[in-house]
Length: 459
Image (cartoon, rainbow, N blue to C red; front, top):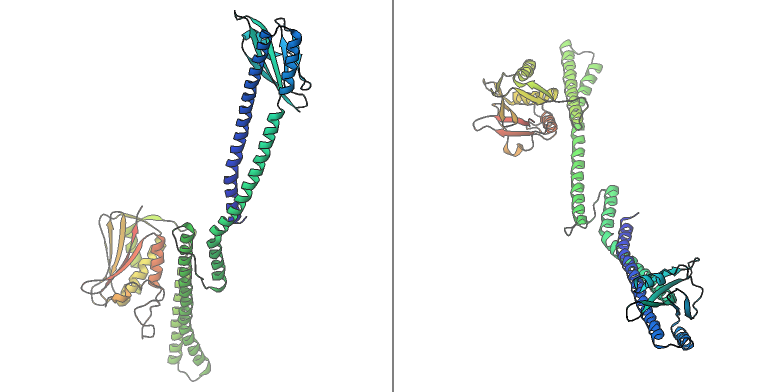
């Protein structure tokens, strides 16, 4: 069901239900009020019958007067002597029941007015009975006057009220439907615009104007959708550049390998030294391609949480010295490790942090110069452990400090002789530290060189 239809149904329910309950309450109250009023009128009529017996001694005259009362009022009058015998019966209102006559008995026994009702077995008509006692001067009950009346007038009034109630409910329901439909369509108009914009963006990649004015939920949703669209476009551009750069990085070694292999295959007069040189070039370019593929594979794997990778608590000093020892054969400079004395265990994913430290050390070794070693410093502050890799190279340009962790960004031009950086090592470090909930940083030292590292919280 569409949203505007749900809103219309909810508004209709909210509007109609109170009306139904109020009219039902009014009907019940009207029924009670008319019943009480009728019983009061019947009590007055019963009192009039008792006064008639008190003031008119002639039975025939009483009967004549009572017949006249009955004709004008539509009621039936009966009078019972102390032995519960009927001594007067005037008026006919249909077949009624006098079985038990509880109202008459209660009037004799209590000396006060009594009332009851009776409904026909076929539930076609309801009757009220009211009995009023006739007392002498000493308070002794000398007889009881019984007044009987049907409820045709009340039934007609209640039926009329019920018809008016239904008619009113239908009119209110129709008005509510029209109002709810208009209001719901107006309320969901901006949602429909947002839906249309989403479909357009999904089909063409172009985002139309969105209903972002206001402070309601629809405006917030539109602003969020706009931000999402901008972010998607940014990521699409980034992925496009990523693919183009990757193709360029693969094209360069492949071109060199293709040229070297053509020379080896087409020139028989090459000397052994030339053949070794071209074969070495092919090996060098294939190693470069293999390294690029490995780093791309690492970046791809870091985009999701790999199964089986769990955090372990290790002695940071021993672990770091083992990592540096494994790297020494491939480094051009010495490495010095300094770990604060208050650091013992560290919780991490060992192979991932080892990869991060390895990339930082290789990057520092590439730019380091002088006789001093590359410094790896590990510190603790509160519940955060920080790794700092400090070199004595040329440093990082200020405009590049915020970009060195981007994929394929390198401070050395790729066409420069001897350039081996592919711009992926530090981006791998960034993804690893993101997985650990930490932060990376890079800055220049006041005197010389750069400091690149990361901080990981310990829970």
